[in-house]
Amino acid sequence: MSAIPTTFRVKSFGCQMNVYDGERMGELLSAEGMIAAPDGDDADLVVLNTCHIREKAADKAYSDVGRLTREDGSRPMIALAGCVAQAEGPEAKRRSKMIDLVVGPQAYHRLPEMIAAAARGERPVDTDMPAISKFDALPVRRRTGPSAFLTVQEGCDKFCTYCVVPYTRGAEISRPFADILTEAAVLVEGGAREITLLGQNVNAWTGGLDKLIRAIARIDGLERIRYTTSHPADMTPELIAAHGEVEQLMPYLHLPVQSGSNRILKAMNRSHSVDSYLRTIEQVRAARPDIAISGDFIVGFPGETDEDFTDTLAIVDAVGYASAYSFKYSPRPGTPAATMEGAVDPQVMDDRLQRLQARLAEHSLAFNRATIGKDTRILVDRKGRLPGQMIGKSPWLQSIFVTTDAVIGDMVDVNVTHALPNSLGGELTVQKVAA
Ligand code: SAH
Ligand code: SF4
Ligand code: F3S
Image (cartoon, rainbow, N blue to C red; front, side):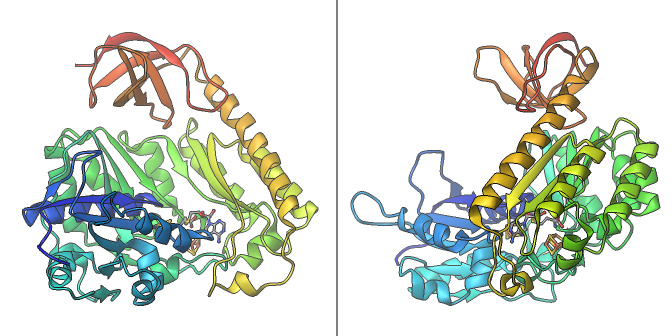
């Protein structure tokens, strides 16, 4: 390689924690004097911030690397970051000669020195999980914008038998209260009206997530707080109570269940049962009756029978999810489930996924339809395709289209006029614009 890059691009895949990490890598590179390449422009450095959650993730990352060759045969400096980098380590350099440096999710504060080494022709690899938190080494947030992510907890000690996250992100760690509060205040100063607290198990934040939420709610100018992803076993009574008491805490809870069969939940090592999960939902709804529940599902886990799958459809009906993500089971090397017997036939898996998604879509549509006629407030976060059309999020995280001269970051009061079947919400009429 040659000179230190002057322009960069960070491409993030996977979960919101990765999006957050991607932003912080960008801010770090900017603080070093590099410039973010505008969309469509060539960059001297490309950081691929990868996800390893499902099969072929590594293959996809390598083909993304391959595609970075330019028409004249040259290429940018290439950094492999994120969970594939963590999982592959030095192996990544053997699999692709184009990769100049490999940096894991807990080591990216060292990017500047690694880039300098790569410019000298070295190919540094850092997948350490250092005791000193990367957060201490990163520059102050520079991000501006109405809706911001803030990672408060990282890693996972749950070891669900299908999941790579405990291996790629390491053990659970919680950031200190004061650091989080400082970062939240900086984000609000930068224009954030909404903050989403992030963690692989955000509700396992050691200081009590409810206390953190109550403290952040006192920041002047912050109107909305969300958090994700929660584990059902860590929904404390205090956190549930906060849903009924903290005005800024939005009525939305992402609470993955994965399966509606106790037998499968046990094989997944989920540490919650169908009953305990439903009880938690009941308590959350008692605290906040209008709350939107969303979830994650896996179909075709090893040994899943038709009966198990029917139980999954039953829990979908029992909860009535406002939205959900559903996946076919994907064996991940090194996880306990990868060597379990009873692989489900791919066609059966396809069929179950289709049936599950159809059922989930019915519930999303029902949830969205129930908001027709209601007055609500949206936080405008992007432009629509039609002239004058803007899209904003309702408190229940629905995307609502509206014709308005409001700009991104405004909060607009709207009346819901229709709902679309794909759960994206409908077109609305403006009633008044909030001051
Ligand atoms: N920490 C969160 C989310 C982790 S990953 C939680 O506990 O739920 C996001 C989702 O990906 C999971 O909820 C699960 O539904 C899905 N997932 C994880 N590993 C998977 C695998 N091996 N195959 C299919 N889906 C998987
Ligand atoms: Fe993965 Fe389970 Fe941890 Fe979620 S709780 S990150 S699914 S191991
Ligand atoms: Fe993917 Fe890593 Fe997130 S594997 S889902 S980017 S924690």
